[in-house]
Image 1 (tube, rainbow, N blue to C red):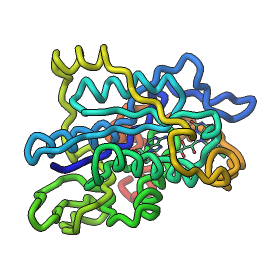
Image 2: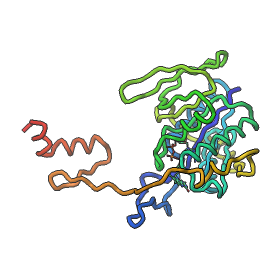
Image 3: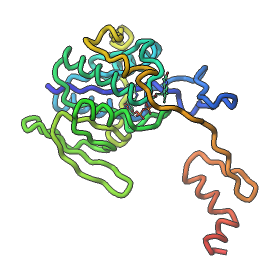
Image 4: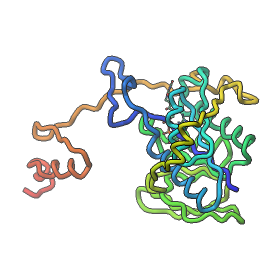
Length: 274
Ligand SMILES: Cc1cc2nc3c(=O)[nH]c(=O)nc-3n(C[C@H](O)[C@H](O)[C@H](O)COP(=O)(O)OP(=O)(O)OC[C@H]3O[C@@H](n4cnc5c(N)ncnc54)[C@H](O)[C@@H]3O)c2cc1C
């Protein structure tokens, strides 16, 4: 049976995010948390593989104790185990330190429940947005990595091969590689289904195991938390609203914004239409 690990991150709901103008940081207080959307699609893909080929699905998140809510959601959707990796010593982690700790956790999951065949990450998070953690884990674990995956075509269990479609800016690429593999998921990889009643009951009773620094046989303290995080955030700011012909361009979708822009006189002039 395959062992699949899905890395999920609890993020602030991006529709509610505001920036504190005084210190240019995200205002997290009072903002509802959700499972990062791409991670939910990655989990859905893992659960489809479980249904089709048979697999054990372990979900892992590194985060503060309230992340338990997101782990329970993953259990309600059908994950077998959902682990909270949490310790004050992990606080202040950048993507380098985050990928180090998640690598440790994946190795421990392999010790507990058998060798890991596939690791799913989202293509990026809605808050940090770097897209670095998945490739970081793949490098540390020496895994083949398939990024921007929009479809899993087939898994050949005998040959231990996986074939996927990668949706890139300038086309779609069909790629095949060996297991074990790390996949970063796009929304297209699988629709997210609703939790079943039995899933919700299991989730209500489920207490996610918590792994701290003490849970790992060896931790390099120079690679975790602030100490292990060379990234420096120089400045964050809200981009200025750009006005066209003295008017703010507002819209819910890129299409709505494009239509408004197109209807502006000076845009049509620039295009040579007037
Ligand atoms: C100096 C510095 C200090 C920071 N301190 C903090 C802090 O104290 N608290 C804090 O919350 N953030 C902190 N951050 C932000 C933190 O670095 C990032 O949120 C984290 O490293 C993940 O990066 P990302 O969000 O860009 O993930 P991406 O690379 O965009 O994520 C890609 C995928 O990796 C997986 N993934 C990412 N993060 C996790 C996770 N934690 N658990 C499981 N899977 C994950 C998910 O599948 C996700 O879809 C800090 C950043 C910097 C630069």
